[in-house]
Length: 117
Length: 110
Image 1 (tube, rainbow over the protein chains, first blue to last red):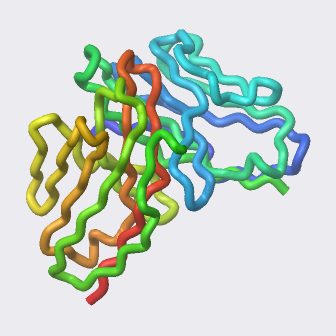
Image 2 (image 1 turned 120 degrees about the vertical axis):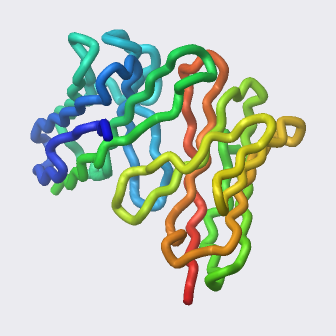
């Protein structure tokens, strides 16, 4: 069964350092999402790509976070500098998005658990 | 008011019980609806999509009420393995906004 791949699975860093997370969506999925999930809360959308274009980054803290999907396949999310409040699970998801209302179920990767010390 | 609201629970039920969760949404332009299941420290996994006509998959039944702007999930004959957090997901028309509820925790005990 096709899966969304993410790496690393765990990352411990000190505040003010830079961190980067990688995601490889299910083959053929045009839409890719990055979410942040704090313990006890639901996932919060950070950025959504349609192919290589950003279609929603309204909740992305752009002073420190950046995301790219250069060839419309895999994607990288970067934080620089990391802050204590960034400790969370970072989830990547992808969906087929054939047409509005169809094929838009999202499939998640295992996530990257970030701890900022 | 949050755009998607769920009762956080926890719901503590015995094996074999029937349990129901509701999720309310505020944006009338919401188009697609889903229930996801999330185990502790794991990623969310799609449980079922919610269609206007309702959806049933084994012991699980999902309903959509557009007039009152809520979706529901009914679990019959609860199993220990159903213990998890159930996330309600709403997607707004245009496909560019996906909102997760905070989740409802379910504990099924023997």
